[in-house]
Image 1 (cartoon, one colour):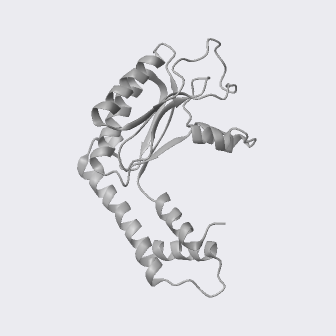
Image 2 (spheres, helix red, strand yellow; image 1 turned 135 degrees about the vertical axis):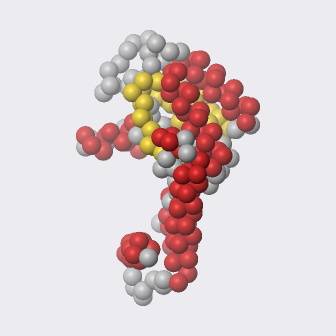
Image 3 (cartoon, helix red, strand yellow; image 1 turned 60 degrees about the vertical axis):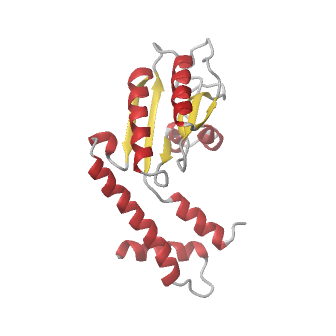
Length: 207
């Protein structure tokens, strides 16, 4: 069972500007070429990366069927969560974590989370965020189809660095407010941490 300190650290870690994306591999493209290109980029920047299966199975599976393996590559810039260019055997984007967590889900809505990816860039900073966005733009145009991305920094949609800075500043303010509130907004006696956390977040929102 998590201690209160561990819960606070986990909640703080969960906060932060992120990008959310999903899509499908373009069957006219080469998965091996995508992997080689992304691996080359990772080596240039000295980013960690991991390669999964490099070729899809010969049999084309439909959207609802997959073999439980991960195909493609992920890369991890410093202080950034992994960026997933990874797929199931049906060609739909999916991360290893999503596969572990959502593969057995039976609710149709929640089962859709299997194909929803996200990467937090908050602690990596603006320059890394911009690089990740540019890489995803290039890769999505060359290798993917039905690709959709929501950028909480709004850089994907606008290319506006000033707006990106404002959005990073906003999230930094929220995280700082959260930490300050922990120090100035005490937990009541016999109050569960979950109830306290909800009350704390409400207080931050009202401010």
